[in-house]
Every structure is written in structure tokens, then in C-alpha cells.
Amino acid sequence: AAAVINGKIASPEQFKYQALLKIKTRNFEDICGGAIISEQHILTAWHCVSNAKPENIEIVVGALKFDADPYGESYKVDKIRLHDKRAYKKGHLRRYDIAVLV
Image (cartoon, rainbow, N blue to C red; front, side, top):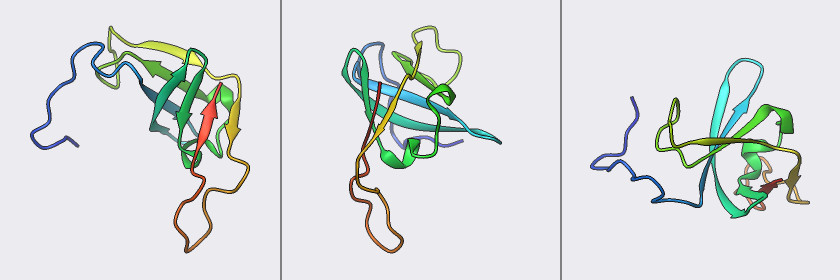
């Protein structure tokens, strides 16, 4: 299992701005991180959600663990707003790798 070496388990409400994105695809579920920037907006990476549909994304906030966390609250996504420029071109660094979930 993956872990952070010498890491510590976060305490409830230690990282209030952090959000977990669970993104359902055809065969499995991807996970990405995000930051709460307002009551209705999550800032995340373009590459995490560029091929996703809003109805296939679950936002979890307040959780200390990925699954079955009593502290976590789940929310749905209404819209995905991608940066106007494409975030990745083959052979180039990722630029404009930013998206906002509403």
C-alpha cells in the first residue's frame, strides 16, 4: 500500500480547504485532489477532469481517509470549467493545468 514515509494522520479539520475528487470512468475510479476556494467552487487540475462528466465526479470534504470516513461529506458537481487553453501538448510541460468545479 502507498504511504508517506514518516507521515502523520491528519486530525479532523486540520486541512479544511482540501477536497478529494472521486472520478468514475468506464472501468475504474480515479482520484485527484482539489482545494476549496468558495462554498461552491473547487480548484483542481485540468488533466484530472478534462475527460469527465460532472455527474461522474463526487467531491468529498472533511474526510481523513479515502473510504468509509465518518467525517467526510459528499457533494455533486454541476459544471466543469476548464482553462480556455489546452493544458497539455505532447512533449511540453503542462501549462494551464487548471479547472474549477461548480
